[in-house]
Length: 402
Image (cartoon, rainbow, N blue to C red; front, side, top):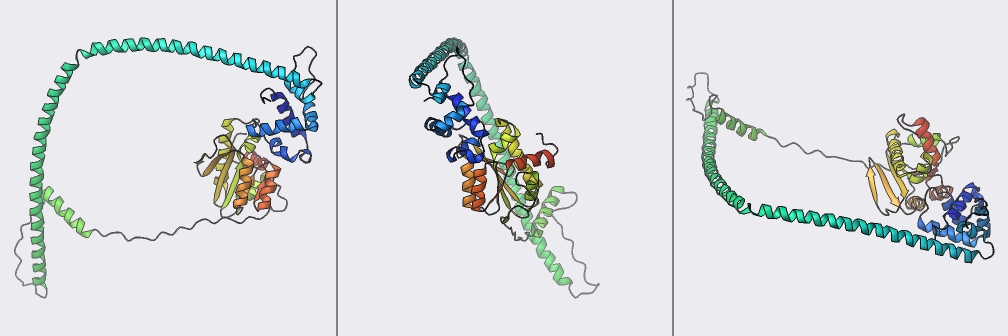
């Protein structure tokens, strides 16, 4: 059966599940009851199968659909839920009619696209003709431009050759000057050592040392600069290497909530922010987004990520936050200012697996009771999404808009 044809029945079943108490919801349907927004295809298939097999669930969903008027056309959802005599044959007729309507709509769409494609083809052919005409007009002057470019190229090569020869002469002269300065510097060092040795132990009446003519002076700035560079290179001392020790932040082993702190109120988030050491916070993304805007839209996801970032900024200790979203972008993730955003087929199952892999220092924020019970059984702490939203609205940053 086409889920699109039974969309009204599926929506009625989800409304019926939401108005039930948790204890009355079948185990197979609890994850469906806790969800908001569009159901993934596997969950839609499961709900349709349960409706087909359960008289009780069909009756609950039937109560959510008003009685059809006498002159109203037959509804596939009503026939599927009420199942009057001959309902299967009547639904088959509706399915055939629906299929024909879909096929007619598809044919009409394809015909429209064909007309657009033909129009685009005509415009492209016209542009091609114009381009060919421009190419023919431009071909006449190509040989002249190539000849002019060749002359310019030969002149540039000759100029470059002249410049290269001049630079080679300058490099050779600089090399000779450098060799001369090195030899002169070595000679000055030898003379300085000789003067130092001869002056030791002598009185003030010692003969005056002879004047040494240096290759540099104040009126020779280039030679003076080179001499100062030699002195600086001789005085350079390599900096001592310092040992750098890094301490990896260890996860903080959590205990249960203090007495008087409710897991669904803002006080639970205040307790979480005050914990010392490393704490890993995992948030059911669309669950929190549903409380910010129902039904949530893609832009609401950014508000959940911003809320996660504010948890990091307001915490006393080190925090690592992961926001998990149901999505068709399976396996994809990205980081935004220390917040890791992950897309999975089922956020509920991913949160449970995270707690089972390592529950040390883990706090899971979700309104799904089944998920909280599972992570707490694994050793993690479970808080409600309502606590996070209340903290944002009352105790979070003033710039936050609910």
